[in-house]
Image (cartoon, rainbow over all chains, first blue to last red; front, side, top):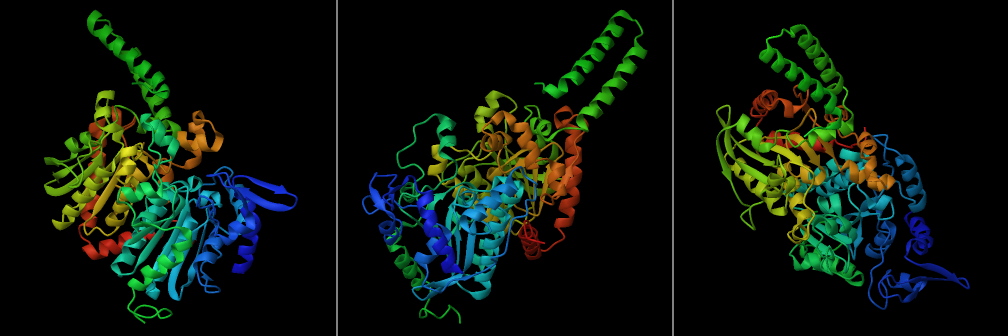
Length: 289
Length: 314
């Protein structure tokens, strides 16, 4: 089932990139940063990173899991959870349906457990193509269940964030998910369990201001947009010119907010390294077993 | 400062005052006319204030004359000792914090301050909190836990500040830090949204054992203007957005997202701050009494259960 999801995403890559053209049946994409023409299949082999300038394209949740976890190790949790539109918000149902159609997911997150070079983890990945990866009740609930599962199974928690923030259509329900996920992580902390937070492009608003910023170790992908407020809002706030690296991973590193920036090609190794430093035992054996 | 829907009432009230003055000066008895107008004014007042739309409540919540945190501190606490700083960077003028006595018992108070006029607002950054403000709150609530003092938190903010300096100092990290720490706080915390509860900037002072809203306060994940701009590319449709978002006290109580609504005197808190404070005092007294009987570990567990259940599928 998981492999089917990934196969569906292969077609979707070409639709969501900045420029897509079909030239004599060959599919290619133009890099939004350096303008280089990239063949889709080459880009895929390069983990969706531009071979010329290193621009990191956004990954769907299934793609992220495919390049991070050991093959066939992923077991999905809570697959059936779906949003209920608690405010009867205008056009929300339609938005949900089309997002489900486009991504193959029920909501903006995939959660479950798997292995990284043998190290067992509990893992969640936000889906940036599902209503901008926004956090509503389902994302909040799935993250909370994931955290509770990590505590129960004594496994490290790994969360990949990619989100425009709290989901407007669920109002204060979405806002409260910030409190809920943060409180869950406080409990994870009490239980002495590792939480690695990976910030990818984009990580903003209510997601950065809650669970994403609370990792024991916080890693970001190069050039990722990470911040609190939207760029336009910040520009308008004081009519100040924004520094060129404003709200990038590098900006966050400079200001002491994250631990390291890891290029996608190195991410799996970096994660395995961190996991090995937090466990006295061999891979394949869970801590405290 | 007059809101459009208050105008007819205020005009009527002014007319009544004129007649009273006229009676006094000329000695002509206009008692009957005055009484009839006063009855009409009361009916009009009820008609307006018992049928407020979410947008009208938003306007009341933002009213310049509405009692702010400093006003409530004066009306509710004695022996007030203001404290400063986050021990890291600076002192955020948008946040007031300190120790006082509530009916004889020491409490820690934190809150956002909006000004009553432009000068005050500029000094207080319109109640928009910087990271150092959130960290000041964190410092004070942790201190409160050490001394087993309850915390009363006053929320009144359009939102957390979104300038470059706020990003540099980790605005999102400061908010997340409060959400995380307040969840485990080993002392009772009661939060009241007195005016505007602007999203994460509000929630960062609001995680505790009871979340109250004043009757005409509002609480939302984005401002109605922001919501309208996103949904319909038209910020002037804010009144419609306010309807859609369910941001009023009564709606949020019905949805189970807050724990109580504190009634305001007819006409809104700005027309009778003392009367409003009396109502809030009663609520706080009752809730504090109940919370102080619970041992601190159980308090944290109950807090978790409450938060855990929001958005949980039934």
